[in-house]
Image (cartoon, rainbow, N blue to C red; front, side, top):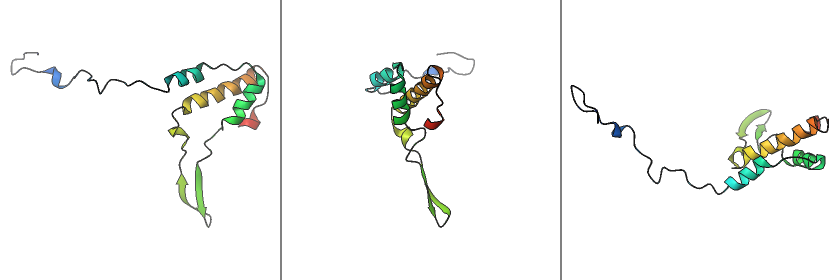
Length: 110
């Protein structure tokens, strides 16, 4: 509590400690996320397999056309995947391995 000439100011109304329900919960996918982030690519066959397996863009995104006019758009659903960032990072590392270590042209994977 801070006293001023007019009236006391109570800071606890503005700053409250974290309660049990506000604390971060245990993330069940964290070990899998960590494993995917730590995965290193050392084999060209594995790198090619990963680059082919993980698409460059979301395959679910579509524009629905009727008589040449767009009547609806289906947004990309891939970002709903809780491991989306890890898969994109893994694909990027595989492509970088193919370019840097193998000297391959990766345009066919894009």
